[in-house]
Length: 100
Image (cartoon, rainbow, N blue to C red; front, side, top):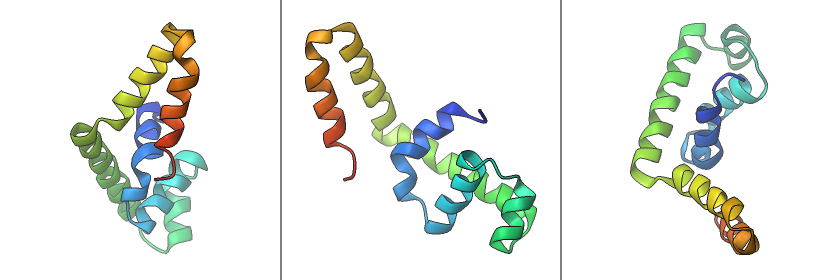
C-alpha cells in the first residue's frame, strides 16, 4: 500500500483533477505502475510524472483542508459504528454524496 491517506483523498477529490492528472495518479496508485512505466505510456519524462504526482498530492491535500469531506465521511462512519441503530441513516447520508 503506497499511501492510504492519498487514496482516501483521491477517492473523494479526483474529479477535481485534470484528466491527465487522474490518469497518472490512477496508474501509479491503483495499477501500481512505476514512474518509468507511466512516463513511457503517457509519452513524457519520468520527472514529469513525478512532478505531476507531487502537484496532485498537494492539490488533494488543499481540497481536504478547505472542504473536509474525507474527515466528515470518516466521522460519520465512526458514528455509525458506535451507534448501530443509526447505521442505516448514516449509510444513506454517505451514499447520497456519491456521484455528485
